[in-house]
Length: 272
Image (cartoon, rainbow, N blue to C red; front, side, top):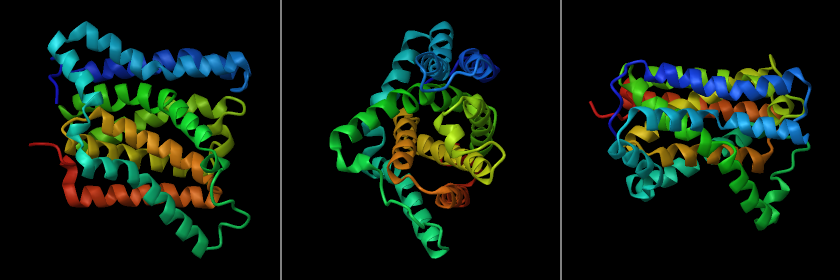
């Protein structure tokens, strides 16, 4: 873990900066009717996605000394904090939820016409490129901020469970403009107000709880959050689950989160 700034509202300031930057680009994309596939739409989408990382960099360099900044960057790359066991748990939890979702949907007859996996698995080069693109346009810039900056500060003032749910709710709110950008993956997969949309919200809150548990258990490893988020995106991209199975996957993530809370309590593995 690394030292935190004394200002008790630093996490609130962080959320203002992160959402403010992202929405500065995403809301105009919605208002002007750009599609995500348009050059301008894609540019606005990418620039907005940098909000969590840029807010972190600004606050980290403005309010912390060199030692704290060095410890922060170390927590992003030090795989030794995770070890083999927690690396496997981090990478395999989401695929496990996906497999349970397939089993659940299959039992209930929700897999009619479903192709088992996307074409990515048959082309290793495309799979690698897909994974790298997902890393740099999601998990990396987001988790530098959400779990790297905001979570430790929230846990200074709230229980780990409460901090996870607060952060998860902000994470949901941060995404909302993306559902109104034409042809965005969010708009295509989770129509606002649909059952899938509410399941997505539940899944994100559950993921936030699981990621806090992993973060605390691995002594503040930001890398664990980045890898879990990457596993979430890549698994979704490979399985291409139909709507009913997508809901089951998100529900299974919620079940796993409940099991984590039941076994670890509201402290979620944090040191007392």
